[in-house]
Image (cartoon, rainbow, N blue to C red):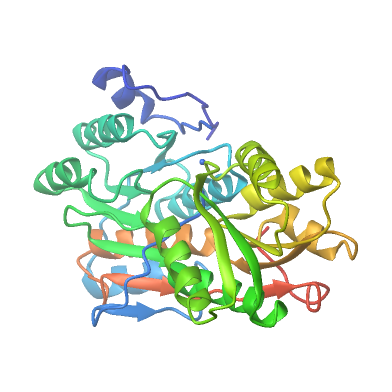
Length: 351
């Protein structure tokens, strides 16, 4: 089936969106997640390939055919979310066949636009709505409406309120912890750190929280800045880091909440001819792996995510629910691993 690329805006009418369900809508997204660790949370240490899950479900509970899947994400200019969108499409077709209708739409982190998208997905009787929430709390009313209408809603990469059926995310608190433990160890417990922050979504908040919880144990490590929003983008990282370099003459380490902003921070350092610090990010993006492999570069490490695995799992769990099989836990956390200059030759990020 040919892929149609159509940009969503808040003003798109319901009839246009419904008609668009006949194709795949792609538009231009930060990798994030809900790191809650309550009793209903399980850590999935091994995301299984997309095999047999659908067959097992249908054998046990019947054979409800998957007809349509919609995925609304924060920013499709971020390669992380492009990979997620590709995985949603591929897994939906694997389960439902080549004629399954798939929508992939960017909210541009605009809550109103995302609410409008979900409303239209609901009106079009979409089987599964995969949601990367622009605002965990703000999205609650429209999620509740979708659930009342009988839609299956799976939160992915970041949490969402409103009664979603399941949440599949990276363990973002762990990502912040392992990243900043590396920083603390390399600094030997003493130095100046800046945090290149991002959009105030659940996953980003949790990464920063995990980082701060580790650094707070070191009285001789000072966080010079932690509130500058680089929008999770390369341009944003360049902008924020340029300002930070002007403001602070002595920086020892940078924690960037994702790899695009971290790569932008390194670009700012190169332009300013500053080499007095190192950078640690989150994602495992190809550009970060390349930067880490550069022995003379400032990019030192990244806590990797699995965007393809998360997206596949979201569709698999949604299809299980469609066939009457609920997950054993509503929250699945995907662990991270740290790639550094020491192991970059043997470890892979996502591709």
